Image 1 (tube, rainbow, N blue to C red):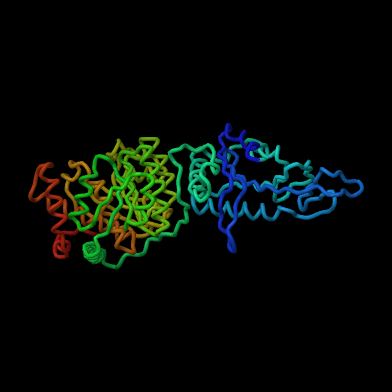
Image 2: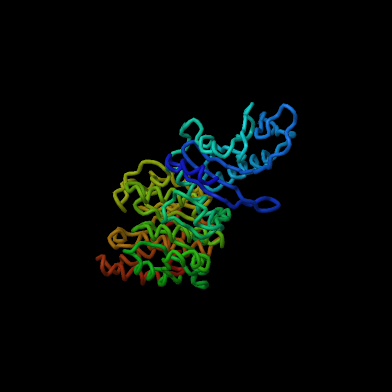
Length: 456
């Protein structure tokens, strides 16, 4: 059957074979799935030996009247109900993983039979040679290239539970994955009535537990990020090999995904680490650095957004672009005010079920319903490379010791902001400020936070 699906690859389709699925009573496989401009098709293959034909019937012809299959020897629904159920399952699964309500074609293929369709029912019935044309239909585009790629990548992750070489065709080698995605639902638990009490309690837990943060971050900021985590009381790790990233993401207490210096090997590592963290129910933070102006990272950010980060941290332009709107970012610099990104941030929080931290002169944390402002911080923080990226790692450490993604976002903004204020009082130049910031993170305590924090 696979050879009959190959022509689809030249027309923008991605084809998958033996796709594993989870049923209520038992697991099962989808024989073939095709994703392309005309939508998504599930192809179920059923073979049947020819029997003695009744008078007036040809022994090689089966007729579909829209309700049942009429064989030369009798009538039944052989394969029809199964194909429809598989299509219903896949449509629901795609919706859960991507948020898309896709058009699904249930196709039942009967090799070595001449198929006559007298009426259109819930299932399309064809012989094996007609499968490609049934999948492509009239060629009316209902999915964009980005939507096709998003669905295909999710299927590629799912298919890693079977032989990789025979599962997927048409996907780039850089996104081959080895873990099945069984995505837990991560919700944003409400913060307590006093956000400052939450921050203080969170800092105490962080220093008691020393959470291990797996940082898949950019090359420029690794050393500074590690030192920030150590100064605060967390433990950093930069495990980047693709084959180890998935293993380590499950071991660590939290995962940071920072797109600052994105390349193909790092994309592969991230695509393996995120599902592993989700499967192990470990929080992960997305820092969509420079999303908006740059195409590759923007597409990639939208893809992994479907994996539902616990917390998103970014400047206003990055948050606006991640929400699919037009931002005015220039590289890593924001051209938008933080307040202008609040609607986009709330939308992203509702989409992911987590929290969003919008950074700027005033930082804003939201879970889609409640929004909290953090007015700490100093302009010198923008003159030291890596301060913003390190805040993403701090957010991951906070998420590791909190049941509330909103509380983790508020804590990340407050801890870094208060430390920045303290550091600026002893250092007025960026070189010494970097060291002073580490010292200030180390000296944070409840009294300092109650005195310095500006949360509203």
